[in-house]
Image 1 (cartoon, rainbow, N blue to C red):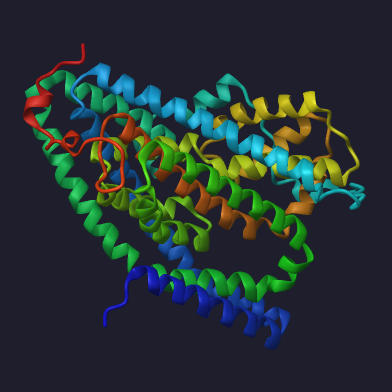
Image 2: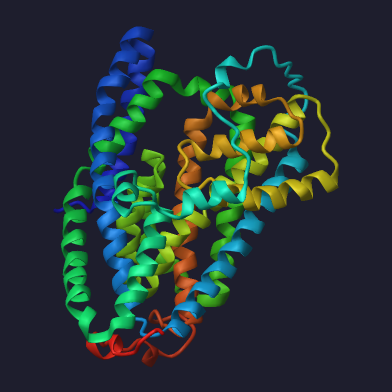
Length: 431
């Protein structure tokens, strides 16, 4: 009997945990470290393969989707709905992180005294400014943006290109047709890349546990448990709100997203789940023009798991350092994180950078980041999976607001989803 990819990934996860625990207990520290370094080559290969297909997949799907929207009014309407949704989700996630950390106070009693900030010197707390945001959002070269996999810059270029193709009408039809063919090729290529996922999951989990051991998780269990409780509450709220807007059929989307979310969890990479999420959204019934437009923007503006972590971790460090933040300061923090998290899109180790920037704003010792470094890889897994789930829910909600119907159990009428016209829609100019 043929095993599904999801079952193979789960099997890889379980076997990886068993192997990791066995090596951590039976082998020497040096041997475990060498094993973690050697086995991680499979994770590196897989993530490189995923990064290889991200740029052409985003450009082709997004440009074709925009070109087929037909006019600037449709594009503006979908963009405004997407932006509104992501702002609300961001506020919700940051606020939830603040509420939970204030209720449980995981940092109280640690009495952390910062001595040497050398361990966190590699994390530069670049403050949010308009120039920082523009430098991360506007590409100087699309080739350079593709080479560095700057999704936000790729999205900006794709929006301009898609609008331009729609504006020139029939003259742009051959390019749209070629990009549409590229979409199908990239999805097939994605299927081949995903075959490496189970081995990747095994290597990533076994390496992490072999080197660090489950002891790291147990010693920081309270902090980790309360943060994962926060993520669980966030999942419940977002799925519940999606069910109200889209309908009970949202449960079907949750099941479909399980596979890419699990992949993001085990590899600690939202990017690894992008192709699978896009594919599952279209299988659920979200039109390609909505999914290919909303999802890439979400990867830059809707990282709710990471934003909840930023607010939770910042207050946790303040508590550990016996620094009390007033309600007014925490509300200010919420607004700062709303801006900073957007300005840091595409920055390596973005969550830690955003936290470092926020700490400096409130005169909290940046050396407090040392408290997070040991467990951050485990927390990054949950953040990545939450980001994937949130973006999938967002695409489904925008599709529902645009009148799309996703089958039995969903709100709306089934006749909304009409076959997309290629050449006819391209005749409508934007300007």
